[in-house]
Length: 128
Image (cartoon, one colour):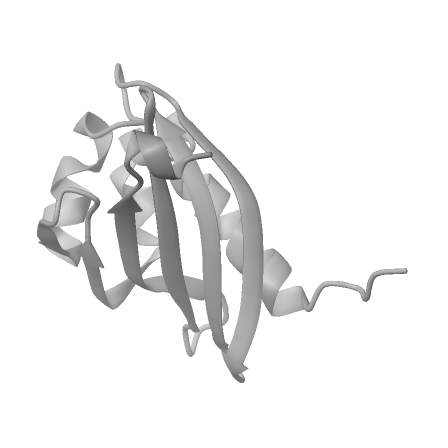
């Protein structure tokens, strides 16, 4: 029997999946609700993104308007401290496989918001 999932982990997974939804990626107001004001990302490309840069580009990136969908699997979460959740999962986007890590931080107004994200590409030989 598995232990029930911590509610903060469930919330972080739900909100991470919202960021993969093309309708959310196309809607700046919806996306803004998911990103922490101090958000940063190190993308699978190695690029460092700020919140403003990510919000400006989100609709055009993978999973957006006309881009390939994001297939995410294997979510695992850990509560690092009250209101701080680490998620790890994997994605396949247009045949490219990546391992991903996200840190979600509780906003004083209530919801968890994405504080930091990193994607690491997985070479074809390492996928097995």
